[in-house]
Image (cartoon, rainbow, N blue to C red; front, side, top):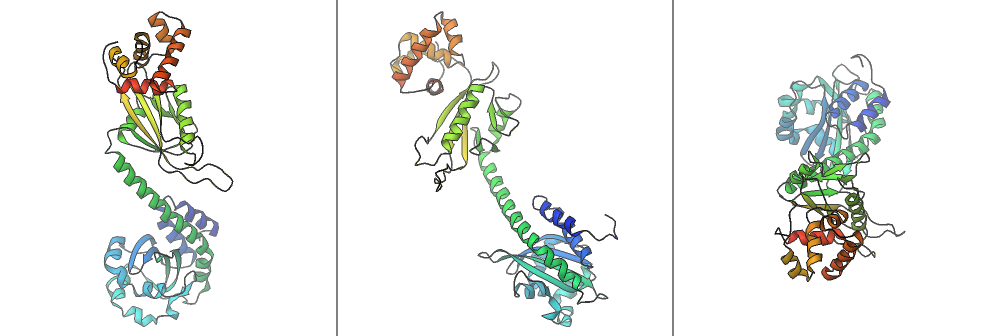
Length: 381
């Protein structure tokens, strides 16, 4: 866009919504608003009482937002007048405050006169959070030679106000979410244990430093093309997704689980990984009975593949020698078929033995059984 080309209304609107997630674009929005209104400068600031935060600004000379926020926000007489006028309307401020009063103000002489050639002002403020008294103030400043009653400045602010309102609210919410996620991420990084925050659909939200190591380069965990968390084992991946779905069910709903362990068998260079799926937040069932979609925490425990003492397994769970030997092999990461081949018995025999292990340990799945064995620690099979 050339310097003499007035930006199209649609282009300004597109840029407003793009700025929701790209803060630097707010300066471009301010520049385009000033240009479209025939003004020399424009500012967008979030205000609450005498406090202000500059969101975007254009057309100012050597303007330092922090200096304004810390030293001049409370002295800005035109902003004070604006915030006392009805919200969501465009105001020509010289109708409410004589221009000579502004020109002779300390704020004008110490600050505003030095940073812009702007003089006549049109402005609006948009309610962002009524309870917090938070508003988005948009001011445009025309040169002293301009017609203070020119309708262009009113028209552009009136047309853009609905879009600025939506984008301003989204911008604040998004930045609040980013701040909260950043704080949670910092907190999780203090955990030595791998910790992953996920959605009920299995999409990664946060992985702490310990968990990040599991994604690369060992690739025990990964992200599939749809953005869902996967493991290096298709079976464990299915179990993980089932556990996420179960954890997302409303608490009163039948089948909702408090926690579930999934054992992920890596290769010879990677540890065993036990994943526990825990609901952080469960939403109540809706009127139609659809499940909630609260956040899910996945906690990992890493175990180096090692043998587990047969005597320990027998005494802990009352297993037979054959059953304890089988369970010890499974704890090293071996499959049932590999264990059967190693021991020298049929697959049906080890299936019978593992069912007996289920009964004696009160478990129902191989992952739960192996998790119990691994927790006992290494020994000799």
